[in-house]
Image (cartoon, rainbow, N blue to C red; front, side):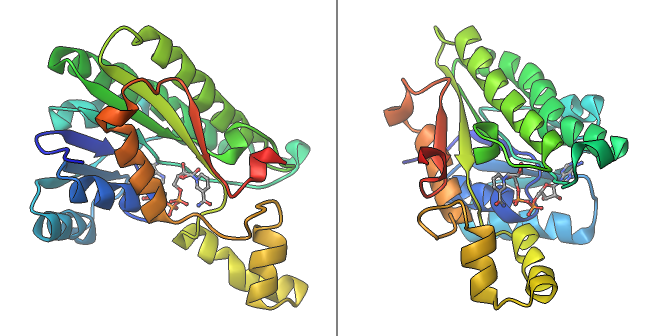
Length: 257
Ligand code: NAD
């Protein structure tokens, strides 16, 4: 699969799934734009490393995905957007009556509203180019719920709904819009939760992984960032031309339960 000459923008791509997606898109030949809300030397060095490793153009653009104008600014500053991957996301866990309002607002803004703003800004560019791919990184929580995750589940269900709507609005054009719904993926974010849970419940690492984190994932295996990246590349391929408005679960059977 060659994505040479395509420009891909991946929001929230300095670590975890976003970085994995950037790497697989670059491996397939796409020029990539990395993004996060920080603006450090490491952020720019990360892009330079991708460029050197895969022989593509890689840029880092700072933009805070909690700010709608900044979301639209990211697309404008990139100057081209053939492939848009909405990946930036955060999590907070609390019962609804104790859920901090600022956390609710941040999760809805970063995990859901950013997707609205970037798609609205990118679609005219895709239309002008006569081709486009939108891949929204939703979650198993875009299809099903867990307690204490009101904001995250609301935001991810919203992303799935928006994905279907944009797919219908672009159905007669060479543009597709789909969502990938991962179960648990072993990113730095998830890895960081393991030591605390081991301590709190006096469990081994293996018990935490199998019986806490992967309790609802029948395969008892994490999906990998490379797999999420590979599926993104597939959705950008000609084979996926007629796949639009759908959700692709990568959850080891979680949502089949
Ligand atoms: P991560 O924390 O490793 O990466 C999140 C990225 O988003 C980072 O690059 C971070 O800098 C960036 N980010 C955070 N706030 C931002 C902001 N305001 N503006 C711009 N960038 C911002 O997390 P991850 O596990 O790789 O998650 C990535 C996406 O995948 C999220 O949308 C998450 O909901 C989704 N997801 C993750 C899992 C999982 O198990 N890890 C499962 C399903 C879905």
